[in-house]
Amino acid sequence: MISHVDGYLEHIMAVCCDNRSGAVADYIPELTRVDPEGYGLSLCMHDGHIYSRGDAGTKFTIQSVSKPLTYAFALTRLGFAETDDKIGVEPSGEAFNQVSVDDRRRPKNPMINAGAILAASLLLPPVRDIGPGLVDTVFEEVTAFYSACAGRRLSLDVDVWHSEAATGARNRAIAYMLDSFGVIDSDPEAALDLYLRQCSLQVTTDDLAVIGATFANGGANPRTGRQVLAPEVAQRVLSVMTTCGMYDGAGDWVTSVGLPAKSGVGGGILAILPGQLGIGVYSPRLDQHGNSARGIETCRHLSTDLGLHMFNLT
Ligand code: GLN
Image (cartoon, rainbow, N blue to C red; front, side, top):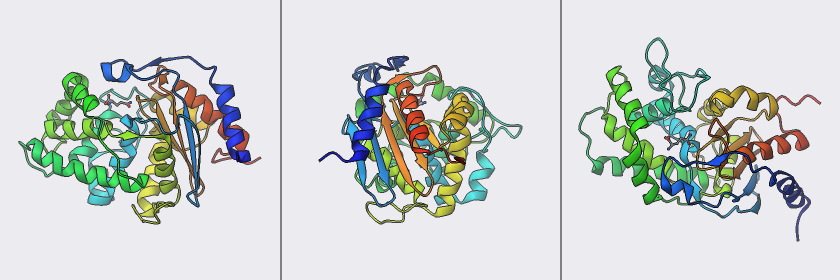
């Protein structure tokens, strides 16, 4: 039987599916192979119940939606003082792949590539010449952390990872630029490798919704009951997602949707209503900021219709 929530989700998907604006990411061939019409939507409530419609079971690469997770893992591992010493919390107002650094040459925030590569470097030992074997070990810990947030074991899209590694000139430049600034204590090549692997983990919109609900619940996964991260870490990550998660589209997003969120060039959007629920949307055509165009429209409808804006006073 279809619940009224499922019926509502189908309704807004029917409204938004006419939005064919934007284009699928094509900087690597693997990302062009997706169905541009793919469209999934999932909500995970604070009791762990998942409502999902459309292509909610389709796997896609998490890409930049990984950034808040690795930031959370770095905060958990190193604590706030050490992490803040390396990565700022200010919106950059620039594109995700700009080398936006502050006057101390720290990446401005962990949601842009520079900050995310640095966050990945913080998980590695502070030594040079780290081989792929050690990156394997740390990547397994990262995968275990993401999987605990999602409530199921996530796996790597090896083809996407290899293509990202083969074509990642811009990200390699960012890693070495940060290294030249003296802010990477580890091996820049290993940090880049770890970052590209985390971006290549596969998720579904159900996974994103559960990850969102875990953050919304102060770090306790509502489906497994496991406390995956500390409430103060969840609070910090949600704050940075609010101001920086949608890159140079962040201000428009916060005023119109009003939810902490993170997008990825794989077409996923994770949005969170603190204390209430997690939302996962997938639709691979991207707008000029690299955010899912149809996904943004879907979130706008959800927020307006259900009064989800975090400053909703009506
Ligand atoms: N792997 C992509 C990159 O690093 C992720 C970017 C994104 O999703 N915005 O360029």
